Image 1: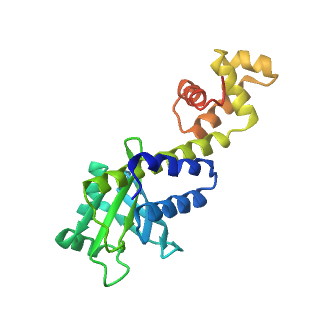
Image 2 (image 1 turned 45 degrees about the horizontal axis):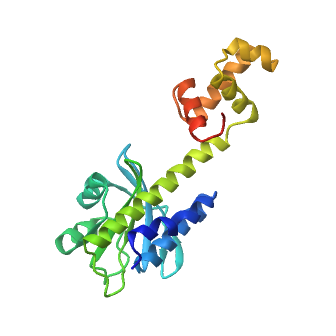
Image 3 (image 1 turned 45 degrees about the vertical axis):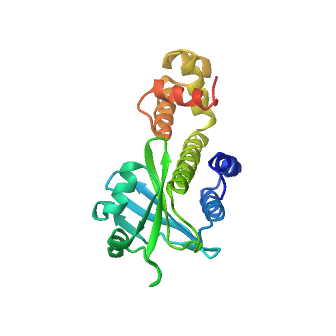
Length: 231
């Protein structure tokens, strides 16, 4: 079993993926290989509506799309505990039977599962569910801790991909306006320098704030400075 300190190194090359589907498959492939797990099903999660939605899975090296699967996790106590504690948990016996009301059971010989939350910072953005493992796998505290670390690192990678996509959608003019704002220029000053009307400047600002999903100019500039997009 790979030690915790090597998990980050194993995941590091995933940051080069710009396509989300490729990234998700890459995460699942590394997850199954590192932990000797035979299947893995990834769900996205939103705290708005407590909705878990299937995205993609791997079973015996075959990629499976599970986008039709949706659950309100409030009806599934085991999911609630994983999301609340933001820690990987192993379920068997009575606790596992509580999953039977959901749409996640794929075989009659399944009698246990592991659920790993994917966390972008303090926010749970999804989780991985697995049902089939090598026979000699023991989910002790050390292994669960390593799985939790994997989920946190993977969640941060997914979160950063989302932020990068937001920034990539900004037009050249929107980035130019953001750069001028970072220099302390007003809309009227930018209009004079850029040779456009003040209303056009304000429209660029408005569209940039929407794309970056922020509330004001200060937040927008802070985000772009943090990412090194402007200086």
